[in-house]
Amino acid sequence: MKIATAAYPLDWFETWADYEAKLRGWVSEAAGQGANLLVFPEYGAMELASLAGAEVAADLKGSISAVSERVERSNAVLAGLAREFGVYILGGSAPVPEGGVVVNRAPFFGPDGGVDHQDKQIMTRFERDDWGVSGGGALKVFETALGKIGVLICYDSEFPLLGRTLVEAGVEVILVPSCTEALEGYWRVRIGAMARALEGQCVCAMASLVGKRPEIFAVEENTGMGGVFGPPDMGFPATGVIAEGQLGVAGWTYAEVDPKAVRAVRADGHVLNMTHWQEQSPRAVPPRPVVLR
Image (tube, rainbow, N blue to C red; front, side):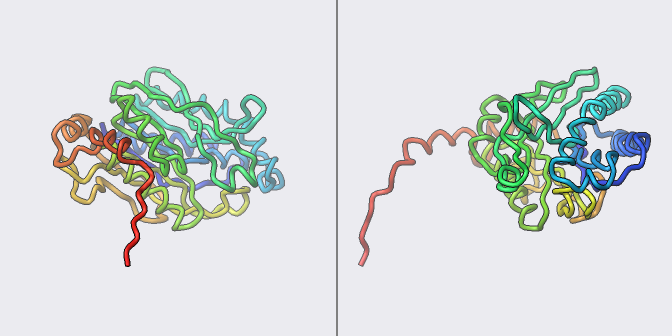
């Protein structure tokens, strides 16, 4: 497969046609480069708030409501683009109401019209304390023509057991859409994505919001870049970095990924992190105190 992962800047739109044109341009560019799996970042849909006007977009509850009201229409656009260009697309996530709470949901579209989504599992302090966003539905395995794909949205990538759950279900590629304000936030998610690739002997593809958009609540400033990471072992770069963009520079980052390489390193790598994971449990007992003088 060829993965395109975005460093995506939020824009301000006067009309829906402008929004559609932007999405078409991004998808067309990636597909034109031969990509068949496109990854947009966490909260990439927040630019929909601009269509409700400046006062609404700058308001906490107003921005959530404005975006969630337009998600269905946005999803229809992305679904159409996935079919038209014959690609898989993980769309930018959005806050949406579900069962009396608001969840952070990333839609996933297939080239034959299939549509599903992945909800974020664990909220950051800002999401839970300031924004009132809650953890959503359980993790999923997306069985595609490209192989089994999982999604860990931003902060979720920093929790090993979530990644392990996907790996044990047969996932070979984990998508990590991210939204981070500061450089340390970007590196927390990137380190998490690289750690999941190491211990699960899999590929993690990270997308980021980039740039400033002070008119839209909660996504005023964004730091990051695209990146695709694997285990630093046979069949992969020694650094584990398959591809990376430039910090803060908008655009796609591309990487050719062969699922056979994942299977090979899991079966006969120089180390076998995925297989040896289970050896932790009997050894992860309270340590015996030792007094040294």
